[in-house]
Image (cartoon, rainbow, N blue to C red; front, side):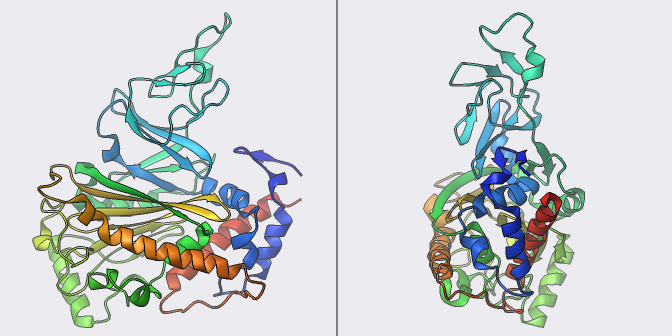
Length: 414
């Protein structure tokens, strides 16, 4: 069987091979070696996982004005998100309907039209074809608009899915609206970005991002404000502190109880004693707060979506971490920091200070993930068991991955 889907042919990977690897996985254990290291795992994971998942592509505030756009790569697949002149937001494959050239390089921009750099086919920001020079009589522009991608908006964030039939979204969307709503994400602005290239399989990057077993020794700076000894959903070990935090959040009208779905988690948790932001000293990084409730001491709202993202929102700043595979052995980690739209750089916040802790933490994680990848290449590698106390979320991630991969294999076997 040879099926072509979203630019990948099944001949690029052997369905039976990946099915056999999944069969080898023991419950509560890490994945078999080939699922991390085999050269064809990138093509398999893009088709079986990334194409069929909801991905958080950004925040609405990144498209604050009409005629703006965000261009991104999902692996090797170019996509573009636009806000048209009427203020409507759209998502498209970033591929010209003439001969396929990328319309806009990755990044953010503003333009009244999208113009292909190759032959100047020109598109409105609602995706319709505006002009195509020297085409024959009878050419129908209406048949050559940009191909749309499923887009959902929730709580000021933007989510896309490249599947023809995306998985259910509404349960997550309603929970996210309730938890993120008080922070008013629509009234933020993007203050800083960072790109980190990691020579490690994306699943190792995400497993590392889903647990804090390594945090007490791996991230000494993070431990100042962050509860690095937490359990599954960052629950405090001190029952009195947990009760006090719960009471304070209830009084402030901020939802906090941990919620989970098939591909997402969300919870608000208390930071370490004396800390109100995730920073080098636990103190706010931005003077202009996103929320004033409880004197700005609202812990951290954490949400995570599989396969690629976690985020933390404190009263002063929102940090997002997005993981994109580039090959079986290379991953790009995109970080963003958002602050109140009225916060003034150099007055209310300093960009180097804003970025310092998470950049340092990401650098430490890069070393850990790259070392992990090198070790898995060993012929002596055998998948080990997860710590049920400290690595339950990493196990949850690989359980989810395995289930998604298995569903894909089962749907495509001869």
